[in-house]
Every structure is written in C-alpha cells, then in structure tokens.
Image (cartoon, rainbow, N blue to C red; front, side, top):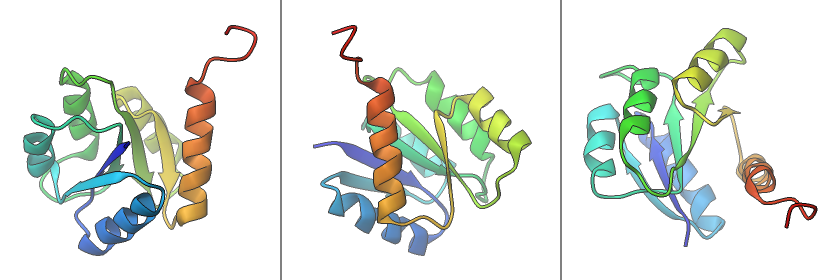
Length: 129
C-alpha cells in the first residue's frame, strides 16, 4: 500500500486530503508543521509528500530542502501545494527539491490525474522495456 504524508497547518485541509488519498487506497499520515514533519520522517518514509506552501513555524521551501537531505528510501515524490499560480514561487519550489506542483482548491479527480501523470512519467516506456 502506498503511503502519503500530508504537511499542512490546516486541520481541515489535512482531513480533506486524507479522505481523498484513503479513497485511492493510500495509507495517510499527517503533520501540522515542519518540526512535527521532520520528527515523523525520521522513522517513516512515505511514497508521496504534500507540503503546503505557507505554514507558521518555518519555511516550506526550507522544509523541502531538509526532507531532500534525509536518507529516505525510496525517494518520496514531493508535491508543493499552492493557492496561487506564481511562476517564481514554482521555480523556487522546484529548485529546493519539489517534484511537482498542485494548486488549491483540489479534489479527488485532480489528485487522481496528478498521480496518473506522475506514474506515467516514472514508468519505463514500452520502447525501453
């Protein structure tokens, strides 16, 4: 079973995201901020991590860089969750180690499409198999 780790200061967003991923047969864990997230990641390596772009208690971009410095195996796919389509912020997130961007508001269909897109990008093509 794939594991998704949701890092967001909003309990409502964490619960909503949990419901979406559980409906897609994921195991889900949560953290409300960077400190709790880093503590959890020391003992649990998820397949996907959703990081909200604005959180009290620390920089989301610094959190992504710290996650990338951890020896997590397999390397999790980090989705940076934003409320604005800001090209400069997107570039900063990618530079700090995010793998993809997802915009709020999102729903189950959007998450499913994003996961399908990620799967297609990481699966070997038929020509190389």
